[in-house]
Image (cartoon, rainbow, N blue to C red; front, side):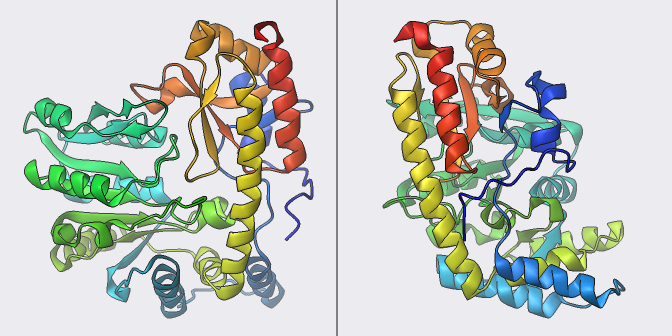
Length: 390
């Protein structure tokens, strides 16, 4: 578990490394990619061993590994999160964006409103709009650098056209781990407005310090009849390219409807993704995940200290994820200027805050899931790019 080992991903068809020049104008040879939410760490040994075993066997025929796969998921959710999951509740999607799309397709109609607490993961809005549904933005309250929810304001926004709510828990990009009280508030809001609730919990293993992630089924068990859970090993174990995530549906009626739609589309998971998931969700995988969280936590401290040293910049306290959300409003600069300094002067590719919806206008999102040396290099570059403020 040498997270300091620099792995060169350039020229490997990496979206994060090989596309940043085309998208951000940041040169691939000297730039630092801190945008796409994957890490620069090799997957844990049990995952690599399982894939090597499959390659060495050399036959990639139809495979029935559902039992092993679902048993591992159930073990992980119970052992790590205290959440008991039924095997029949687990469906596989080709990643969680696909999971959102399948839920929209199954449970909503064209023209329906889908509520997002913004700023939030940018792909949600993209999928909602592509499905012909309407994005309803309920802006989070920034209370002294900490996102909170204002349900009274959100109640006033509802028109009756809304049929679904997507919650990001833990929150991306703000890094919040929602409390029991906040999760109960979300559940009550969904009940008041008769909304199906998608709870995207893909970052649930990447939690720091004293924060405690609570799965929505444990936070508000009374809303099982409207709950659709999204989970995946992709962020925890850096296997997003295997495109394997889970839609977990506690309610039998919702489950039956989803199962029928999956059958109609003839969707089935791939065995590499399933068996890699089973290998990751293991005691050895858990040990690796804990070590990674500790490493990223140190990256967070280094990065936050550097940001705090630059007048006008402020990073939101990160309780979960490896994604730092940095506010540039204190510089007094226009968005175009601070973005140019990051991209053209510091040569860092970071996600533009505007893509996360209302409330993200003065922010950039930086991926801290990389080697410490690269974090230190990014800090130095940012300090130099904004040196006139110091």
